[in-house]
Image (cartoon, rainbow, N blue to C red; front, side, top):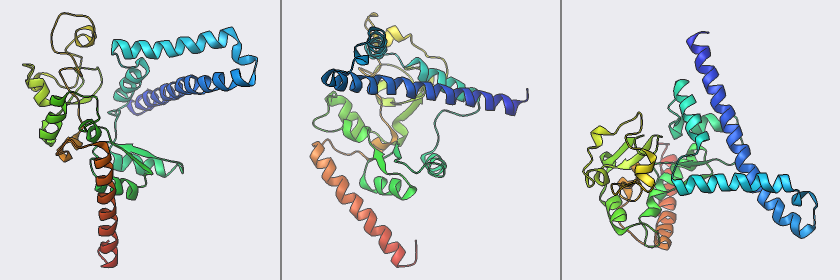
Length: 258
């Protein structure tokens, strides 16, 4: 089988894994809703022992993954297959959104690199319906994150974000400063086999640097975070910036520069 066909096979397998993953999540979520509604409506099938046992086992498996701190095996398998198929597992939002919009007319949400209303307007202009922000809301007064974590996000620039698979088994953006603070050289932690066992990073192993507790994650949007305000202040600011971006685009179009 030629290289092109091999890559296509790997990517098809990755798509199958995605379908299985989505089905798993749907069963957990829809199943729970069915149990709650069915109990009130006295549906007999929601009391079926096999169904309830299987549903409970699926929920417990997810809980166990969270408690242990491991990545979902299906996610790891998908990324491995995509790497074998010549993909990184992650695509530029510009290319990805346009490719999805060409075949899908539903709601699209995009994440990554967004810290202000200008980015949200750009995402909408690209064809998205929603923008998803993570790093911006870590650095808020209400966020349950260590003050030092929030301050490090505020102090970080683009080059302070380091991509590595060493701490989770998957490519993850981590903050260089949090690594060096633990005596780790970011140059030693790139893409490839994990450098630490999962137990050493999240389990009951002897004291040492732990991922997410001592080694912190943040996206490139950290470069746009400059304070730690309340969530309400962030939302108000995003709304103002969004309207400014819309007005700037309208002005460019009116001037014939769009």
